[in-house]
Length: 282
Image (cartoon, rainbow, N blue to C red; front, side):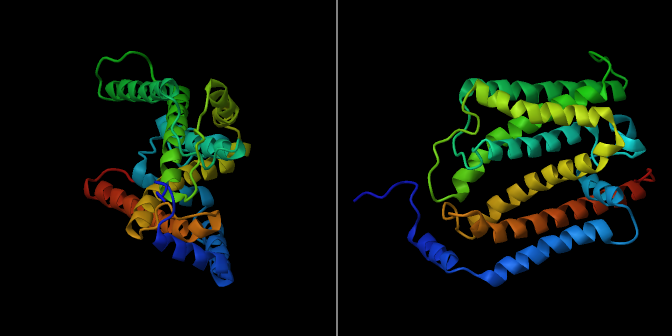
Protein backbone atom coordinates (compact mmCIF):
# COMPACT_ATOMS: atom_id res chain seq x y z
CA UNK A 1 0.00 0.00 0.00
CA UNK A 2 1.35 3.43 -0.91
CA UNK A 3 2.23 5.65 2.01
CA UNK A 4 0.72 9.13 2.28
CA UNK A 5 3.18 11.93 1.53
CA UNK A 6 2.17 13.59 4.78
CA UNK A 7 2.11 10.54 7.00
CA UNK A 8 4.33 10.18 10.03
CA UNK A 9 7.69 8.41 9.53
CA UNK A 10 8.62 5.36 11.57
CA UNK A 11 11.03 7.37 13.71
CA UNK A 12 8.20 9.78 14.44
CA UNK A 13 6.06 6.87 15.67
CA UNK A 14 8.59 6.14 18.36
CA UNK A 15 8.61 9.77 19.40
CA UNK A 16 4.83 9.89 19.43
CA UNK A 17 4.55 6.74 21.54
CA UNK A 18 6.99 8.21 24.04
CA UNK A 19 4.92 11.38 24.26
CA UNK A 20 1.72 9.40 24.81
CA UNK A 21 3.26 7.65 27.81
CA UNK A 22 3.58 11.12 29.29
CA UNK A 23 6.28 12.84 31.29
CA UNK A 24 4.63 14.80 34.12
CA UNK A 25 7.99 16.03 35.39
CA UNK A 26 8.62 17.76 32.06
CA UNK A 27 5.33 19.63 32.32
CA UNK A 28 6.30 20.78 35.80
CA UNK A 29 9.72 21.91 34.59
CA UNK A 30 8.15 23.91 31.76
CA UNK A 31 5.63 25.55 34.09
CA UNK A 32 8.46 26.56 36.45
CA UNK A 33 10.48 27.78 33.45
CA UNK A 34 7.77 30.16 32.26
CA UNK A 35 6.94 31.32 35.78
CA UNK A 36 10.63 31.99 36.35
CA UNK A 37 10.91 34.03 33.16
CA UNK A 38 7.85 36.06 34.10
CA UNK A 39 9.09 36.64 37.65
CA UNK A 40 12.52 37.74 36.43
CA UNK A 41 10.96 40.12 33.93
CA UNK A 42 8.68 41.74 36.50
CA UNK A 43 10.53 41.56 39.82
CA UNK A 44 14.27 41.60 39.05
CA UNK A 45 15.66 44.68 40.83
CA UNK A 46 17.40 47.56 39.12
CA UNK A 47 15.01 48.78 36.44
CA UNK A 48 11.34 48.95 35.54
CA UNK A 49 9.45 46.45 33.39
CA UNK A 50 9.26 48.94 30.51
CA UNK A 51 13.01 49.58 30.71
CA UNK A 52 13.70 45.84 30.56
CA UNK A 53 11.45 45.41 27.55
CA UNK A 54 13.06 48.42 25.90
CA UNK A 55 16.53 46.91 26.42
CA UNK A 56 15.41 43.49 25.13
CA UNK A 57 13.96 45.03 21.97
CA UNK A 58 16.73 47.55 21.37
CA UNK A 59 18.90 45.26 19.27
CA UNK A 60 16.40 45.18 16.41
CA UNK A 61 14.89 48.66 16.77
CA UNK A 62 16.43 52.13 16.56
CA UNK A 63 13.89 53.35 19.16
CA UNK A 64 14.08 56.95 17.97
CA UNK A 65 11.88 59.10 20.22
CA UNK A 66 10.53 61.06 17.25
CA UNK A 67 9.39 57.76 15.67
CA UNK A 68 7.81 56.36 18.83
CA UNK A 69 4.62 56.54 20.85
CA UNK A 70 4.60 57.57 24.53
CA UNK A 71 1.55 56.14 26.33
CA UNK A 72 1.33 57.73 29.75
CA UNK A 73 4.52 59.66 28.99
CA UNK A 74 6.71 56.52 28.67
CA UNK A 75 8.30 55.48 25.39
CA UNK A 76 7.18 52.10 24.08
CA UNK A 77 9.91 49.44 23.72
CA UNK A 78 9.53 49.48 19.92
CA UNK A 79 9.23 52.38 17.50
CA UNK A 80 5.88 53.04 15.80
CA UNK A 81 6.64 50.89 12.74
CA UNK A 82 8.03 47.95 14.69
CA UNK A 83 5.20 48.21 17.21
CA UNK A 84 2.82 47.88 14.27
CA UNK A 85 4.67 44.90 12.77
CA UNK A 86 5.00 42.79 15.90
CA UNK A 87 1.75 43.81 17.58
CA UNK A 88 0.00 43.19 14.26
CA UNK A 89 1.66 39.79 13.96
CA UNK A 90 0.70 38.71 17.48
CA UNK A 91 -2.88 39.97 17.25
CA UNK A 92 -3.31 38.24 13.89
CA UNK A 93 -1.87 35.02 15.33
CA UNK A 94 -4.42 35.19 18.14
CA UNK A 95 -7.14 35.91 15.58
CA UNK A 96 -6.22 32.81 13.56
CA UNK A 97 -6.37 30.67 16.71
CA UNK A 98 -9.72 32.13 17.80
CA UNK A 99 -11.24 31.58 14.35
CA UNK A 100 -10.11 27.95 14.32
CA UNK A 101 -7.26 28.35 11.85
CA UNK A 102 -4.36 28.03 14.24
CA UNK A 103 -3.24 24.83 12.49
CA UNK A 104 -4.02 25.85 8.91
CA UNK A 105 -1.40 24.52 6.48
CA UNK A 106 -2.36 26.21 3.24
CA UNK A 107 -1.49 29.72 2.15
CA UNK A 108 -4.20 32.22 1.25
CA UNK A 109 -5.26 32.34 -2.39
CA UNK A 110 -3.17 34.53 -4.67
CA UNK A 111 -5.57 37.51 -4.81
CA UNK A 112 -5.49 37.71 -1.00
CA UNK A 113 -1.70 37.27 -0.95
CA UNK A 114 -1.44 40.12 -3.45
CA UNK A 115 -3.58 42.33 -1.19
CA UNK A 116 -1.41 41.43 1.79
CA UNK A 117 1.74 42.23 -0.19
CA UNK A 118 0.29 45.66 -0.98
CA UNK A 119 0.36 46.33 2.76
CA UNK A 120 4.03 45.33 2.89
CA UNK A 121 4.71 47.55 -0.12
CA UNK A 122 2.96 50.46 1.62
CA UNK A 123 5.27 50.02 4.62
CA UNK A 124 8.32 49.96 2.33
CA UNK A 125 7.22 53.16 0.59
CA UNK A 126 6.52 54.85 3.92
CA UNK A 127 9.88 53.69 5.27
CA UNK A 128 11.86 55.03 2.31
CA UNK A 129 9.87 58.27 2.40
CA UNK A 130 10.84 58.72 6.06
CA UNK A 131 14.47 57.83 5.30
CA UNK A 132 14.66 60.37 2.48
CA UNK A 133 13.39 63.08 4.83
CA UNK A 134 15.99 62.13 7.47
CA UNK A 135 18.71 62.34 4.79
CA UNK A 136 17.46 65.71 3.54
CA UNK A 137 16.39 64.26 0.19
CA UNK A 138 13.16 64.94 -1.73
CA UNK A 139 10.25 62.96 -0.30
CA UNK A 140 6.60 62.37 -1.15
CA UNK A 141 4.90 63.49 2.06
CA UNK A 142 5.47 64.39 5.68
CA UNK A 143 5.97 61.16 7.69
CA UNK A 144 3.69 60.49 10.64
CA UNK A 145 3.80 57.90 13.39
CA UNK A 146 0.20 56.87 12.68
CA UNK A 147 1.22 55.95 9.13
CA UNK A 148 4.22 54.04 10.46
CA UNK A 149 1.94 52.17 12.85
CA UNK A 150 -0.73 51.40 10.23
CA UNK A 151 1.65 50.16 7.55
CA UNK A 152 3.55 48.16 10.16
CA UNK A 153 0.31 46.45 11.21
CA UNK A 154 -0.48 45.64 7.59
CA UNK A 155 2.92 43.97 7.36
CA UNK A 156 2.36 42.08 10.62
CA UNK A 157 -0.94 40.79 9.25
CA UNK A 158 0.77 39.57 6.06
CA UNK A 159 3.64 38.01 8.00
CA UNK A 160 1.29 35.96 10.20
CA UNK A 161 -1.01 34.92 7.34
CA UNK A 162 1.91 33.59 5.30
CA UNK A 163 4.24 32.11 7.92
CA UNK A 164 1.67 30.28 10.06
CA UNK A 165 0.77 27.75 7.31
CA UNK A 166 4.45 27.16 6.54
CA UNK A 167 5.27 26.46 10.19
CA UNK A 168 2.20 24.27 10.61
CA UNK A 169 3.14 22.18 7.58
CA UNK A 170 6.58 21.64 9.06
CA UNK A 171 5.40 20.72 12.55
CA UNK A 172 2.19 18.70 12.50
CA UNK A 173 1.77 15.06 11.57
CA UNK A 174 -1.89 15.41 10.58
CA UNK A 175 -2.61 17.20 7.34
CA UNK A 176 -4.85 20.27 7.58
CA UNK A 177 -6.33 21.60 4.34
CA UNK A 178 -7.50 24.90 5.83
CA UNK A 179 -6.08 28.14 4.52
CA UNK A 180 -4.89 30.68 7.04
CA UNK A 181 -7.14 33.21 5.29
CA UNK A 182 -9.80 31.38 3.31
CA UNK A 183 -11.67 34.32 1.78
CA UNK A 184 -12.12 38.07 1.82
CA UNK A 185 -14.66 37.68 4.62
CA UNK A 186 -12.08 35.66 6.54
CA UNK A 187 -9.62 38.52 6.07
CA UNK A 188 -12.21 40.98 7.38
CA UNK A 189 -12.62 38.84 10.51
CA UNK A 190 -8.99 39.52 11.37
CA UNK A 191 -9.31 43.30 11.04
CA UNK A 192 -11.27 44.24 14.21
CA UNK A 193 -8.40 43.17 16.48
CA UNK A 194 -5.94 45.17 14.40
CA UNK A 195 -8.18 48.25 14.30
CA UNK A 196 -8.71 48.07 18.06
CA UNK A 197 -4.95 47.73 18.58
CA UNK A 198 -4.28 50.67 16.27
CA UNK A 199 -6.58 53.02 18.18
CA UNK A 200 -5.28 51.74 21.51
CA UNK A 201 -1.71 52.68 20.56
CA UNK A 202 -2.79 55.94 18.91
CA UNK A 203 -4.62 57.01 22.08
CA UNK A 204 -1.29 57.04 23.97
CA UNK A 205 -3.28 56.47 27.15
CA UNK A 206 -1.40 55.19 30.19
CA UNK A 207 -3.90 52.31 30.32
CA UNK A 208 -2.46 50.72 27.16
CA UNK A 209 1.22 51.15 28.07
CA UNK A 210 1.84 47.69 29.54
CA UNK A 211 -0.55 45.71 27.29
CA UNK A 212 0.96 47.19 24.12
CA UNK A 213 4.54 46.89 25.39
CA UNK A 214 4.06 43.25 26.40
CA UNK A 215 2.06 42.16 23.33
CA UNK A 216 4.38 43.83 20.82
CA UNK A 217 7.42 42.28 22.53
CA UNK A 218 5.59 38.94 22.56
CA UNK A 219 5.13 39.34 18.82
CA UNK A 220 8.84 39.97 18.35
CA UNK A 221 9.73 36.95 20.48
CA UNK A 222 7.21 34.84 18.56
CA UNK A 223 8.81 35.71 15.23
CA UNK A 224 12.38 35.05 16.41
CA UNK A 225 11.32 31.91 18.30
CA UNK A 226 9.50 30.66 15.21
CA UNK A 227 12.68 30.89 13.15
CA UNK A 228 14.64 29.13 15.89
CA UNK A 229 11.96 26.46 16.16
CA UNK A 230 12.14 25.68 12.45
CA UNK A 231 15.88 25.04 12.79
CA UNK A 232 15.53 22.99 15.98
CA UNK A 233 12.78 20.79 14.51
CA UNK A 234 14.70 20.27 11.28
CA UNK A 235 17.96 19.41 13.06
CA UNK A 236 16.20 16.99 15.43
CA UNK A 237 14.39 15.38 12.46
CA UNK A 238 11.03 15.89 14.13
CA UNK A 239 9.33 17.59 11.18
CA UNK A 240 5.73 16.45 10.63
CA UNK A 241 5.72 14.28 13.76
CA UNK A 242 3.83 16.39 16.32
CA UNK A 243 0.22 15.67 17.24
CA UNK A 244 -0.40 17.86 20.31
CA UNK A 245 0.77 21.26 21.44
CA UNK A 246 2.27 19.74 24.58
CA UNK A 247 4.62 17.68 22.41
CA UNK A 248 6.06 20.75 20.73
CA UNK A 249 6.17 22.89 23.89
CA UNK A 250 9.65 21.71 25.04
CA UNK A 251 11.06 22.56 21.59
CA UNK A 252 9.34 25.95 21.62
CA UNK A 253 10.65 26.65 25.13
CA UNK A 254 14.19 26.06 23.91
CA UNK A 255 13.51 28.25 20.87
CA UNK A 256 12.15 31.00 23.14
CA UNK A 257 15.15 30.82 25.45
CA UNK A 258 17.46 31.11 22.44
CA UNK A 259 15.41 34.04 21.11
CA UNK A 260 15.77 35.92 24.39
CA UNK A 261 19.51 35.27 24.38
CA UNK A 262 19.84 36.38 20.76
CA UNK A 263 17.95 39.61 21.39
CA UNK A 264 20.03 40.36 24.49
CA UNK A 265 23.25 39.77 22.53
CA UNK A 266 22.04 42.12 19.78
CA UNK A 267 21.12 44.74 22.39
CA UNK A 268 24.55 44.54 24.01
CA UNK A 269 26.27 44.62 20.62
CA UNK A 270 24.34 47.73 19.60
CA UNK A 271 25.17 49.43 22.90
CA UNK A 272 28.87 48.55 22.53
CA UNK A 273 29.02 49.86 18.94
CA UNK A 274 27.28 53.12 19.88
CA UNK A 275 29.71 53.62 22.74
CA UNK A 276 32.69 52.93 20.46
CA UNK A 277 31.42 55.50 17.98
CA UNK A 278 30.80 58.06 20.70
CA UNK A 279 27.07 58.13 19.94
CA UNK A 280 24.37 58.41 22.60
CA UNK A 281 23.08 55.05 23.78
CA UNK A 282 19.74 54.15 25.27
